[in-house]
Image (cartoon, rainbow, N blue to C red; front, top):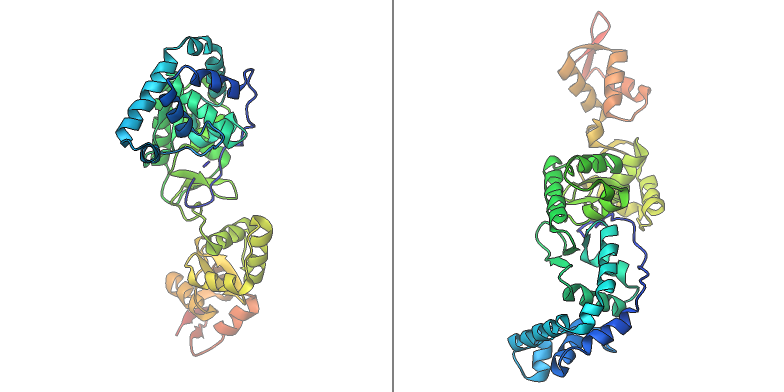
Length: 357
């Protein structure tokens, strides 16, 4: 899915489409229907000549010594002339073919995804961008704070998708993380009014990629883009995913190695260790061993953990203390006992229970 501040998972890439018509030949025929001056502007605006770079209104105006508004007027007149031409009417089958292809992608598609699917290189994508602008069948919606720029062929379906994505985002809590299957199921719950023919995994993920606020991390876990587990910015975030995937405390050197093998990111051992120390999501639970704070592990030496357990639950027997401490720290039983038998901090009662001094 998706552009974002973190690496974002998107729908499976779609291979460039194979059409029955030659896009280069069709562009040449359509341009011939425009007045010469307008034809030159259209070629430069859409990158339809030998140079595939698309020029701005300002750039064309400066080169031709006319205003930006005048260039816009010439461009609009050229498009209108082509739309009114015989060749445009005769090309209806080609535009219908493009529409069917867009429908097969889900009727509404992120602009970059669509253009990549329509053409294999920049020149061919420019030609299809020209076709999309020409025919009223295709509607472009600008990028907003919530959605990427997109094209659609059905305003009703587009509205349903926009509304469903907004509701899906609202249903997610700030730090909630879901598996891909869980998120797709929740998305489907919001798509009650959408044609069932569109409801396959590839289309659903392509629709999800429209949102600028919902995304996934490299482990295919989904949530709000602002969630720490989804917004992957550096070694700390990769370390979090590595330890979470492992499911138990890891030595910082193993964390660094796992980042390299799992995410193909170079992570120096010393740098990884420094990042783990700084981030409250991690807690040192043994010699070089780090766990996630969310697992219930707590910082502090073993003595502090014993004292906290006793303060929370009152005097306890040795086995109960060991059990409580090992929920918070990754240490051997003997280490706990050595601390527990220090009379400066703990006292053994007559009934065999221990209390803090």
